[in-house]
Image (tube, rainbow, N blue to C red; front, side, top):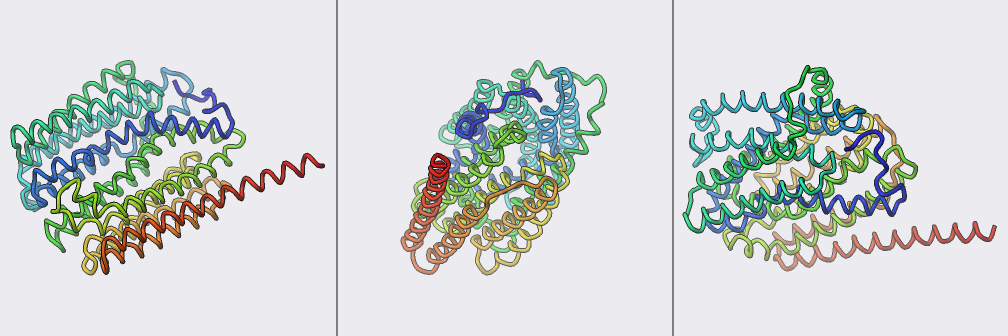
Length: 495
């Protein structure tokens, strides 16, 4: 069980802490990221079986489900996680978690039932080509299941039950993948058939998750923590809601300005960019418990600076190399139907990298428990992103949309950093990470322009050269740091 008396991860040393973070990133993070990246895993199967427009519809349904689930969770997962550290006894933690679950599930059941009955007018109001009332009902039925799965995974992660977490995360993905393979290859299913398979798997996973957390499943005796949970969760809930709404805005804008086929191409680019999100999601899952557990320990700030430096270098280089490979990777995964999608891969992947850097720089918000500051960053990011999408999409197509998303993530990260420093000042060493990020962003932008104006080979060569520059900058910085440490040790010995 995690709590105020939990021993510092890694035993307190820098090397031990980094090893602990890396281990948890692999165990918790990759399991959760694998679960969240189901759309990436099934991308080759669905993209080859359905048309570009039909795949765009499936992707649209997925982002709508994510938006609805996020609106119902409304930051309660963050609140439950934070209060697990704050409360002293297991009984108090179970009571608090039960109250959080009741608020989420109760709201999910009521709103989903209402939306289920109003599926026909909802389908007409959305007006998406191919979206009918059956599709809407299937999508709505998935939402309560997703809320329960998120609740179960939150408890398993923050109470460090590794085996159960891995079983739930990986088991659900593998079962869904096998059933989807059978439905597509054997039964030649329609779009609604593919969504129905996902619904069955989500419902089963939700039931298994509750069973794994059966010690936590209880009806709250009184709602004594509900007010605190709601106040802490509300800013995170609004922030997450804005974040989940942006993919819907992106696809709606593309559909209105460029057509349904371009939504499919953009969805394809997003799936390739999600390969970076796989590693980012792994880091995010481990980073939350890690930084809250050590932030009061000696040397924590040094650990945070090293993590920021290593993370920026690794993700920027990965993003650039992925963009270099995307002109050949997309046809390999999905067929030549998605040839035009590669221009959007770099900005979308770099947006994911920017978001990960922002999670590190904004830890002062969570430490100070001033969650309202996260909302400020999300609002600024959403406004900048929307303005960028609307202004760049007509002239630059899906690449313009993707760069609008990157601009919004950058604005959000800068704002959240400022807010975090205001709420809980920290001593960040930003010179090398900022230089690395600037080189990667500028070089990647130039390479994207070369891909569109010259050839895919020229763009890929520019991406690879930029990745090598990023690694060289990082290596030289590490050598310089080690030299400074060695020099100080020698001087201290001679003294």
